[in-house]
Length: 535
Image (cartoon, rainbow, N blue to C red; front, side):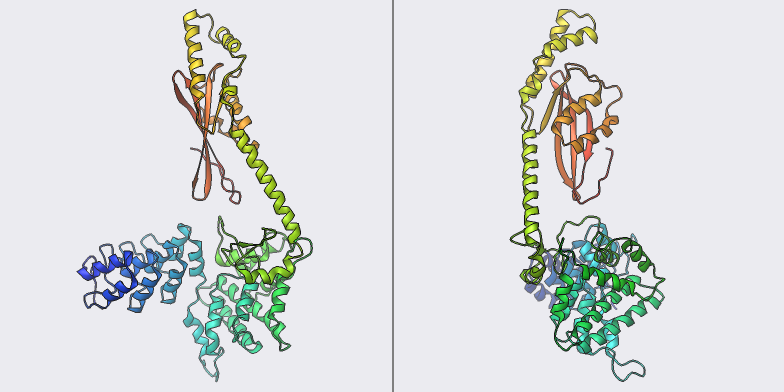
């Protein structure tokens, strides 16, 4: 094998790298046909054209380069990155799948000791992580399509290898989805075919548990799919295609809330039948599911999915009510509460949904009214009358009081000067930006009381209580004085799927607003856990 040096590129190879970023597949194909272009050439960083195409999300380019013999496992990058790592970092699921099908190794590590799945998890590309962790090489399944040892026939007919491999590599473990995949393929939707398939799945499960590098996750997945196959066989024994009946049984919900009891029982039963009781994963699943009453959260399906595909800290997508497919976007036109991935799933689930659709519609309308009411209250609280907050009818008397109590005897010049400063503050704050809150210190000399005077009237109760925990952020020598004017300004911004809330607490001293303290508060989205931080 000829060693390729980094950065030694011909003019055609430089053009190829430019075409991968901005050109078309036809232009790239023309360049690859040239004798002066090496498909595995390296730029100054050790990146091949395939790495460039994978990182830039060019699926057609990746397929073209692979057809021309691109090395999917090239490891010449200066930091040890592979094409699979770049595909995973880009977040493109299709390219990640293409790299895996082309033979990309999943256990290769880069210069910091991280695999492709770990790098994808680090940047939040959970879909790519799931694809990599659930990938099952076709060669391992093809092993069973050939007679082994004294066997006269293969354990798995070659015609079933493709459809079965599709089910094995699926990342959606919803039982309805698996039955749908079986039902849509005539080769699998037969009792004899499913008998051979589930036996092969059991063999793979056994091999995963008995090999040196035990793979409990893959073994559990194979066993679970095998149990679904066996359930399908029970519905096909009469000779008629009754998989539609099985789907309806899985979707049928109880009268009160539509929870699919039968589906929950099947998943729990499949976990309970796992033959290797000493497996750590099985014990973890049992401890998580056993105390939970059927119909309560977490469901057996959610626990099993997290165990096999991995836990996700924050999920901001919807799942189909029928098949559990991720990224569903279509809602029931009546209740707006139930989500589907397409019209087929909606029709399949209608027999169960129509019983509770009206109740869900009432709940949805009630939620909308409450949301509109809260929004209206927030808008009213935000539109404050600056004059009513800044100009206090009793202010001159209070200011006179402070001069007598706190400052002692003063001459008329000093008193007039302080009064002018206070009046200047009132005039300055009248033009305060929207979203600001003003208060005039009338009695308190404690910074916490001054702060709460701002917060209690204009912030929700659940947030105002948190303001108390930020009092230590005030300077130790700070003490609010009667007659001073304060301004609070709120700002919202978003980082890493969390909404941060800052209140900048300012004090009027002379002609300028001087920061007294920053009150750092933030709260994440409703589904995320609440954290605390100090800035």
